[in-house]
Length: 107
Length: 112
Image (tube, rainbow over all chains, first blue to last red; front, side, top):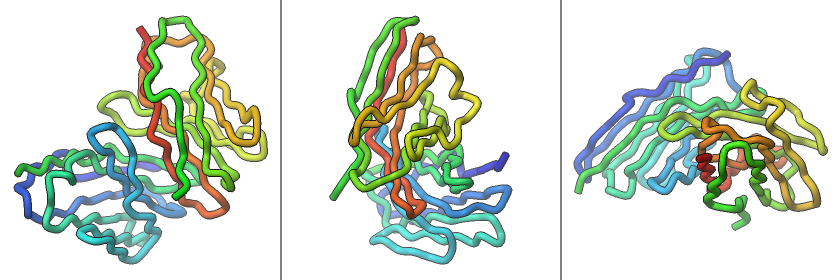
């Protein structure tokens, strides 16, 4: 089946710093979504992005489907950005989740 | 804004007992899903459901699991005889004809 790798696995930032999270996937996909899992375990939809670039406030995402990767950019990080970030390519209408990037933003 | 809801938020049960996890998908959605996340691990697909039948299921979804849409609003996951390794967060998701799925807040199942 499709393999989804995320890097880095762990990331510690000082508040105000910028970061880039990467998601590589091994096969073609129908679509891709980025999620933030907050400390209470809830999965929050960030971006639904099959290709191209989208921006939402301090966050933006880029997917290059032909090269099988997606990037999530976080600018001016805040402590509330802490949590786990998952990318999940969509294949035959089900999400295949990556192993996540655990982000901790320090005040 | 419409959202997926799940009950209970936390369920504790003894090994061998049956549990039913409940979900209310977004009202005009047609496709329903269950995923699970063992603590500290990634989220895994369990089953998809459309038009009152299972569309696809993973290897995890064995005979101990079943899903049902008993009425026009609820979508349930039943585990017949729980095992310790069933302890996990269970997420329900739904979508309309678009591909984007919307996830509920999850039910944390603890099997003792």
